[in-house]
Image 1 (cartoon, rainbow, N blue to C red):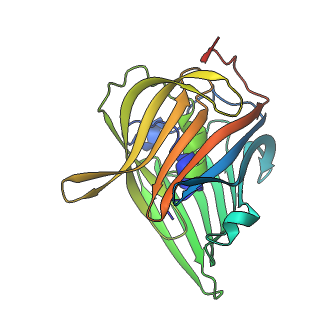
Image 2 (cartoon, rainbow, N blue to C red):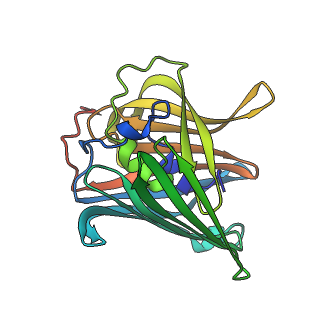
Length: 271
């Protein structure tokens, strides 16, 4: 699961060390309530690059339990050609408050014939984050868990929304960022490594961006294994424009193809 595009996109934004609950509220400075980001997916199969599918993320203004909120959807689909090797149909939903506190998360996934649904409900009381988690497998068997913490806890999509408003100017190449992530079964720490800045030209659109480069890594003992490398615009939008995924069965890449309703000027574009 960690190696699919959904995880890649979510990890395509930076995070700082785990903040305490009292620091969870924050101001959104990165995205509007009418933003749409579209991506094309490409997969390398025996030295041949194939167009693998598409992904779309939309964020709008909505309500949750009678209160104002942001509602974000992320949908990924592999192409018919790639479906023969690995079919993926993922739909994610995240609801966050105007102060960027997660309220609800749902992921319905069909990945290579493996179907499951993750759900997370958030509650905040007594200075703590309370999670109610539910996991449903392909056989229709469900499992409920819970988690309580004095730290901020996020799912894949709310983590991305919040992280876009963080300032990465203080990061130095080699810095490691550790943060918590919840799904329908557990809460676990994830590690990002900041690689520095790099300019990148989009092959399909020809647009050149000034980017911050990050890697998602796993550890086998003391050995660091790079799983994903991603390029994030070095401007107030903090928008991922390229994502490289190193999978067990090949390499995949995602490229930004369209961005509408951006909150801030795209000052990272190099002309």
